[in-house]
Amino acid sequence: MLESFVVRAALAGTAVALAAAPIGCFVVWRRMAYFGDATAHAAILGVALSLAFEQSIFAGTLVVSVFMAYVVSTLSWRGYAMDTLLGVLAHSALAFGLVAVSFVPGVRVDLNAYLFGDILAVNATDLLIMWVGAMLVSGLVVWRWSALLLTTLNGELAHASGIDPRREQLLLTLSLAIVVVVAIKVVGALLITALLIIPAAVARPLSKTPERMAIYAVLVGVLSILSGLTASWYMDTPTGPTIVCVSAILFVCTNLLPVAWRRS
Image 1 (cartoon, rainbow, N blue to C red):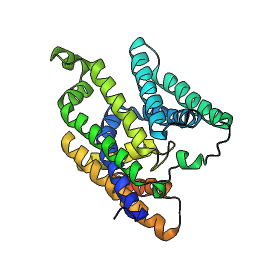
Image 2 (image 1 turned 30 degrees about the horizontal axis):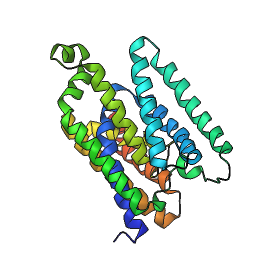
Image 3 (image 1 turned 135 degrees about the vertical axis):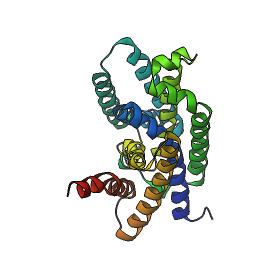
Image 4 (image 1 turned 120 degrees about the vertical axis):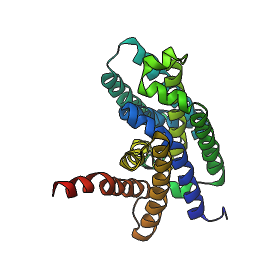
């Protein structure tokens, strides 16, 4: 079955949706969209370092993404303006990554595959890494769900309950870094944040509880992946952007159209 690149692409996309959707809910609740951008952009620097040291792309992006997540999580508790901090780190990491790639000798790499994704090029090894990462993130979210949710709702209440908000935020940011590593080959560094946020935003008006929102976000993510993959196949369009377009259409259908109907 894994001989079919379409099936591999569908399985890879499902793994990304499984990892990204629950984390995306916390990104939406905590208004951390720009943080997702910063971590995703840092992945390009990880790609450059992987090529320079002849290491696995996944290893390089994981190291840099985790480092970026740790830096942002640490500095955010020291009084820095979050939007300014993330803006500086996101664009600096992306710029350094693009420049670093040009200095790697004897390597010609198509950066579009890492900027916008190339899900159809996923191989069996990539697929294994993606599913391991997805299972790890899902396990962390299930294990720390109550603590993460309480910290998101009220940090002081969480602290009074014996939960360290800094630890939970660090755990969340590290999970987000793993999601970036899992998703970079599917939708690319520039579109990862869309796959984090849009399924959660689609699920929000359909859900009455946080748990339902996370489950619906996973379903929306899988639907977006499979529908985008199918549409890309028949229309011969870039797969990563097509997946995001499908997610955007679902967002319009669940959020904007009902508002327009009520006003009319």
